[in-house]
Length: 526
Image 1 (cartoon, rainbow, N blue to C red):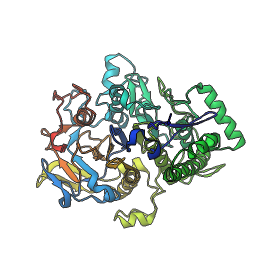
Image 2 (spheres, rainbow, N blue to C red):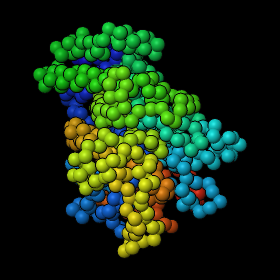
Image 3 (cartoon, helix red, strand yellow):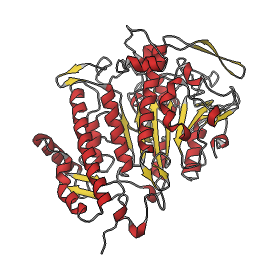
Image 4 (spheres, helix red, strand yellow):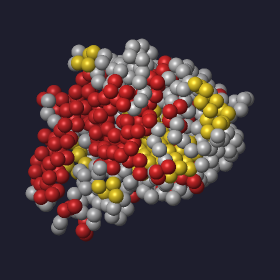
């Protein structure tokens, strides 16, 4: 009987379970990729510390929408130009979860804001209600990504239910709150934060079945057996690809010439990703607090060893200099691999931790000059310091838009542009993969956003970009909601994605201390 291909067809070996991309010659009944039931995917890329005023330099007036040629990208988002036609900017969405005796437009801490980004719940208020010390309390709502995992149904199930990755390698100040709030945006339950892994080798091992991720290890093997095999390969300097060559050669004999090319290119690319992941890992491990262990599901995220430990760009280790750009690139490779091979369909990627103290000396000077965001030559591009270095955007309006009193620090703008470039590169990679009648990006909801507005810690008018959406959302447009009092809630975006894209029938999500009910964001729908 002919062996049929499923989206989770695997190459197997000792301690390895390697998912394959779609192969036409093994598709059942002449089916093509994406026909029927193209996978739905959710990818949330977060960046900390808000955005500079340059983000809104091309924004429409409050309550207006710009489309097509009228929609211009701001300089800090110019790297999205190749996928602009599949992009939607959204302005005037706020997170109004804060429990306070003051008005809901307060300026919470970095950790409090980050904890609420994907849950729209005030973690501090939960701690007060539980009569707990807020410095020790770990609690939140269930995040949007985990609700999708729990509610989307068996047809959306994958070997790894969800993946949490990140680039934060320099622990910062944690606002007298748990480490969890700065290093996790995924919450499986109110007491279970899923910490991001910044170690690319641990992520690679997890994706190929050599590590343990949320119960997603090699079928028929325990997590301990998988780890033993991974250690054995490391000791002998063997690649995971070597462990599946017998199965791969057998597969090559059963597929057509085009699919043989796909399989060979895939194995070659995986070997390169593994090599790069191992190299980046070797420059990270001497520093503490980097999460260099297989991804797991901690009940409580462990506290960091100290605020002064961690890496900055060009910091030396015994294995060489740490390169942030290399780290970012291999993480993009891993995310693309996970999505293309359908290992998981739900990913959160933290481009940096909340209240980042990282020094972005990795940003090339010619790039800064090209985008018109020149900076002081002697600057270290320290993220948090530059965020508060300058800038004042009045709440009052001028011609229906913000009145800029003082422009943001240009170091801050350059860092923001670099972070946006990483999400743009990921989006372009996904858009280059054909799937059914479109691309993988088309069949994905990808969100690039921050937990706060700008230098001022405001929780309203959050910087948000949405890409893809399978024809559900507007593309090539910038939608701006109204001024304070007539703007909309961030939780309505998650509510709209879950109900209009996934069809989950969610009745409510998160909290709004102003008393506003959940409602669909009709203006962003086609």
